Length: 177
Picture 1 (cartoon, rainbow, N blue to C red):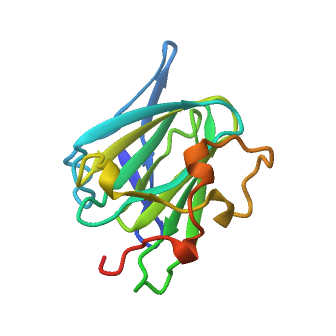
Picture 2: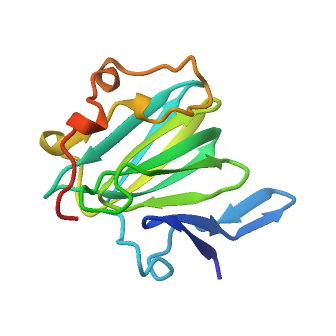
């Protein structure tokens, strides 16, 4: 089987692909819809490059344009974070964090109802397979990055936009997911 799926809690899934190394390097399948039967098929793919120390997030889109995403790091290392922002959930406000990097080849499934962010632990390329809905600026929201207290690199680099995100107590969150 090309993928191993490990539930991390709250619907967050760590995906371990099978890597086929040889003298040339390696090969792996990033996504095959027949193996991802419990995860919607991506409809948009995004890529970012971040220098060491950058924090992107914590971002999400509200209903009816909520998104799920699969995150993959082909180059570099990041601490990836998903925060439960489903107000009716027993785990509201709790989060999962996991290191994704070019060596472990892990992918992380983050379902709708979670804010997502990461910190680049070194210069990194991140690919996002977006499901459910395309990007909608009108529905885009964020939570202030300071909600996560254990970012590994304290001298963080953030966009002006991300610095303006409200605390979770004042953010527009999900009431019905």
